[in-house]
Image (tube, rainbow, N blue to C red; front, side):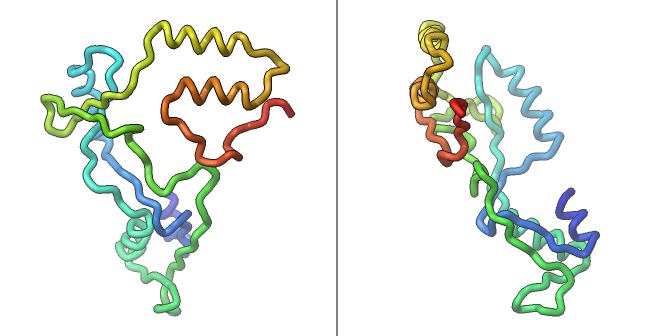
Amino acid sequence: PLFKKQIKSGGPVTVTDPKVIRYFMTISEATELVIQAGSLSKGGDVFLLEMGEPIGILDLAKEMIHLSGKEIKDDDNLLGDIEIKYTGLRDGEKLYEELLIGDNVSKTIHDHIMSANEEKLSHEKIQYFIDKIKGLNSKSSLSEIQAILFEAVSGYKPFKASNVININK
């Protein structure tokens, strides 16, 4: 909707970074995934839809400009209609989305649905982390809080340090 609105108003079309890629699915694909996954689930399962190849957001913007009957305005075509401007990635935004933390995926009976075999915490381990968090108080440092959270979520690394809010301020 944003690209469409920007094109209709004469541009520019804003893209965060020329290398950004994303996966897309239709509403009917998402609906089928939910219904099929519900029938496959044994409880606590994580399913993924085979989504094909990701789409470059810059390619999408260019295609939408062309499909609207307009030409891209750039150094090669100064008389074009719509300029594409790069705004930069927002804090925490990624060039591409990781659908899984690991690569541990198995097939299901449905050709386009896979089951993610992510690490699951036992009830005891969850209780252990709850107890550690309960042991914190208002004088606990940010690094103490982060240490518990990083230990609880295997493989987690914050995108940037600025994504972590200092609650001691």
